Image 1 (tube, rainbow, N blue to C red):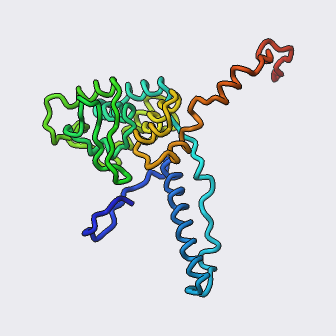
Image 2: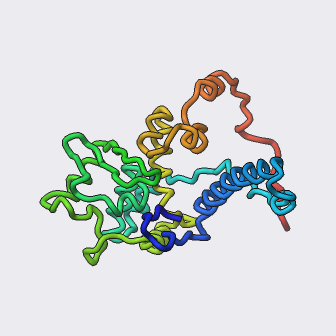
Image 3: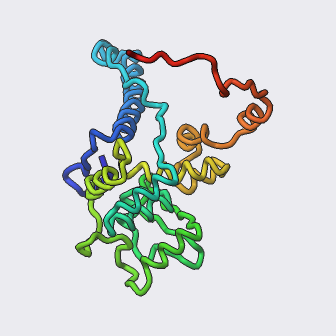
Length: 261
């Protein structure tokens, strides 16, 4: 479900790619949160004797194993492979996602006027949570957006398809899957993995979770920590790696492999 105008007669929705494991996990996790609230309301009504029984909702179980996602991200080599195998219009979009961590919809709505090269920021005016934010550009990101916006009108879309039109809902799904096939990246990724890749690179470089949350547009650090905290350098991990003695178990062995005859 998408944010819908009050005057609209029907709810705005978009299709979910059932083959995208992360997207399905996210939807199921959302369903679990809604179920928790709904059950709390219904149980309260039952205890207040507003309902005759709790049999209708008591057997309903939440989805299992959806709150501890295994974040998939691309290595630096995979990033290069993917970019090099994308057609020109998709290549630009993929580069933009990797360098900013922006969602697909945010990149699609981005206008030239939203790019501030002086401050090195992108203005995301219509974010998922409804709260505008600014994405910080690296030097490489500023170089990309300088190239994309030079000499263009302020109301023009930054990212365009080969036919000169803006990208629309789900139009990236098949092209990026085809690019993954050509790059031998398997299984093929969804576009959201590019956002994970950006955040993972920051986490592994030791960037604080609060800074990553701000860059991604998370309301607080809980979601950020759940996804990326385990990737961050830590005192515990560094101490164990520096202190554990070398046991010499990886050298030559007297055990011979059994060969079939």
